[in-house]
Length: 271
Ligand SMILES: NC(=O)c1ccc[n+]([C@@H]2O[C@H](COP(=O)([O-])OP(=O)(O)OC[C@H]3O[C@@H](n4cnc5c(N)ncnc54)[C@H](OP(=O)(O)O)[C@@H]3O)[C@@H](O)[C@H]2O)c1
Image (cartoon, rainbow, N blue to C red):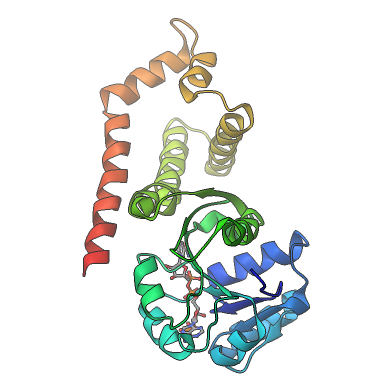
């Protein structure tokens, strides 16, 4: 790959901003090497003021300046964007798309050259640099292209490579997953409020418990069952709580949620 280290963001909304923030704050890119085009002047002014990025006049101008082009527009805008830049991209550039449900074949089909493409499913915790992203390589993308994209998403959290056929499952797991956890957070909070704990303290303790449990699992690499057993003494409080969860079908329900979201993602992709 002979691309310059310059990044070009097509779309500077929530996710585009999260990535720009991650690249700049982690020192992986200099602000002057980041170009942005977004039709919303309020967005671009904000990005320029906050991160010092350079604004492009339009998407074609942006493509002529950057080596790594990030498609960070809504899925319904992807075809229009590709129509404008598909004939301008060359094979020394790299396209990274985060548009949910937009396949590699669809993107590749709209680009005249053999430009490598990487498709990514990020999630909203990227906004606080704690995202989980799955990356899939297109047919012209090699390990060096994956490394560039991985580096970008590691600046806002964790990144794993998957085959594209798993993107719908990833959407049902880590893409939609934050919402499941927010429901859990609310439920834990309400459970304690019901028993008299003030809401502010309940919410803080519940949120930190979720964060702490996740960090413990990630940092030790231990099986979650083992970590659960560590807090479950015979005849104790946690065992009583776990029994209530199992009786209510908690595990099955969570598995159903992942399956339902995956199915919905497949349906939306087919429309
Ligand atoms: N947010 C998430 O949690 C999440 C998770 C996974 C994947 N994604 C994917 O990330 C992508 C971006 O999501 P988002 O939440 O960042 O959306 P967003 O906040 O709406 O940002 C998209 C931005 O692109 C701009 N835009 C529209 N048409 C454009 C064009 N032709 N050229 C350049 N910019 C254009 C929009 O401007 P206007 O508002 O003026 O139209 C908006 O500022 C989506 O495809 C989504 O599927 C998001």
